[in-house]
Image 1 (cartoon, rainbow, N blue to C red):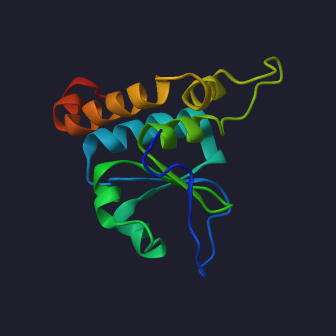
Image 2 (cartoon, rainbow, N blue to C red):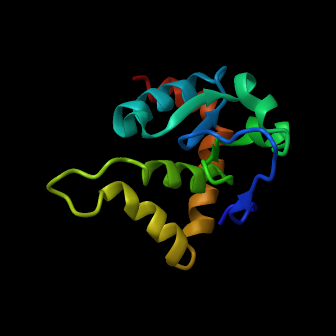
Length: 140
């Protein structure tokens, strides 16, 4: 699990009305993946580059924004890295034909299968640390 452990923001400023996935807007790899995310999840999640919104979340150290995606949910729950990715995927609307969205499975695995969370965070870190190279390999 991320080292936040389901941290909650306690603040006076209003929280977002929808989950907000905050990313590095200057990173080409990040922008490519956010475009894919928008096509997959749609407007159930708000997307924002951290340089535009970090001031709204002073509780989150700037180093965390620079190192991994952050997800701030309407209730104040805050997650990062693989957990943030899985939580945002779980926001995808269900199909009328599918009782439980396939996008919810990664979050369930993250929360319930021993070893899945640390392996996911390791994989996320590996990708994040090499995103310059990966942006050249994953053109959209």
